[in-house]
Image 1: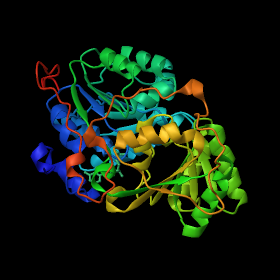
Image 2: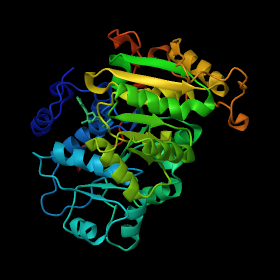
Image 3: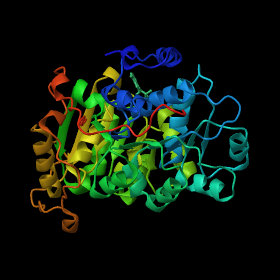
Length: 434
Ligand code: AMP
């Protein structure tokens, strides 16, 4: 399929081609047509799938079909959980709208509000915002959402994880009831479904896994190791392999801090990124990692969601995740855009159950290695560390087709099917008055 056949305008096709995209990603193929037709859309997609263009391109198309030349009220609101993501999405909006007569702005906290308020006063069609600053400016009477036609809730699961439910509800109340809604989420918990039910009207459902987990071969490996020797082993692996850019996952924020400090002490520049870090520290860590100044980024699952870090050669699970699906998300960070990637897991005895569950989910037995001097402890218990936090099935069971491709095949067959339900759905937004 081509971008042309999706029915996007010439101005958008020009911007797409300038970005160097040759064909739409699966989520774009599935999400763009229903959005263009005016449906509400519920999309299951995480960073790396091309989801941002999946909602931005049709949104820009719809707005530019019916431009408001003189007076520019906010016609599209894109709500994101973090400032980093807001900045990333805004950068995308700017690029895709380069050849359109649409204005956009981004607002988030932690910086002076005056320039943001001034930009909005001059009129913007598309506003990208984090909930806190949005409500702040709204409460001061500096912006109005009364003319919003399209509302996008990006990374809805993360919004809930970060406690933004109340804020989202307030934002929704301040928008007109008649509007088009697009909701993107990597996971679908009960809470997310409830939120979707409250926001969306007979949505078309679409889903996609990151391209790289399906198209690219990811070499996966397990090192069995004693718990207390993990830090030593990870340092050895990074040093021996002379790896320059490594994303490491830990299960806790505290664990991320501790590991990053130990690596620094061992002469490997590392930074931790998680929810307790200040905005400044997170931005610094991420930009340091992207530029190559920071060699190792140690992240928790929630912090890593939404980060656009292209072309990662190595992902290491310092600890296996509590939820098997997170393993798939984590390793999806490697082997992007046609590059080969390696995903390594350091597994101690108490993680044996987690490993089995992951292997069951991905339908693969992972190759196991033991490094001399870093052997597993034969006397260690295989009982999971935190029995209270047992493995919950908080994610919908993925289909067979969702397994990452470890065999180097084309992976075409492993794409997920669209969950699109064409029956009994009805567009609630017509092009009238747009
Ligand atoms: P996202 O999932 O929106 O964060 O996008 C992940 C990365 O994929 C970004 O760097 C995008 O610029 C890139 N991207 C989005 N759509 C396409 C496409 N159709 N072809 C190639 N790259 C894309």
